[in-house]
View (tube, protein in one colour):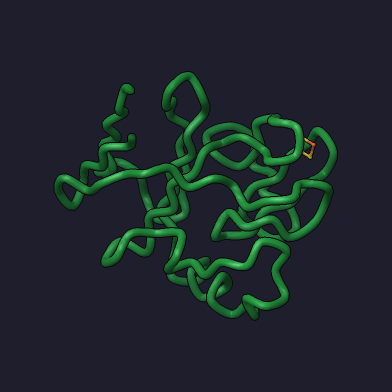
Length: 133
Ligand code: FES
C-alpha cells in the first residue's frame, strides 16, 4: 500500500491543509495552544466516540492533528482545511452535507456522523516530515 509524505514546515499554527492519502482527502492541522486546551477541556465521557486528543495524536507532537478528511456519516469532505473558513460550532471541521460538526481534535460533537474523523497510521521521520500509511 502506498504512503504519503507531508512536509509540515510551512503549516502555521491554526492552519490546516488538505493533502491526499490513498485517493482520499487527508487533513493535516497545526493546532494552536488554545485549540489543544479546548480539546482537553471536554470531558471524554461526554463524547459520542470517546477519545482524548493524546490518543489521536503522536507522542511529543500533540499539536499535529492528522486525520482523513472524510465525514464518518456518508463520506463528504468537511470544510475547514484549505478551503472554506467554516469550521463549525466546535472549531474543528464542519460537514456541509448534513451538518456534522467536529471539534479541534477531529471528534464528532454534533450532527449525524457516528465516529470521529479517522486517524490513519503515520510516523514522524523528523520534526517537520510525517509519513502517512
Ligand atoms: Fe457529513 Fe452527512 S456526510 S454529515
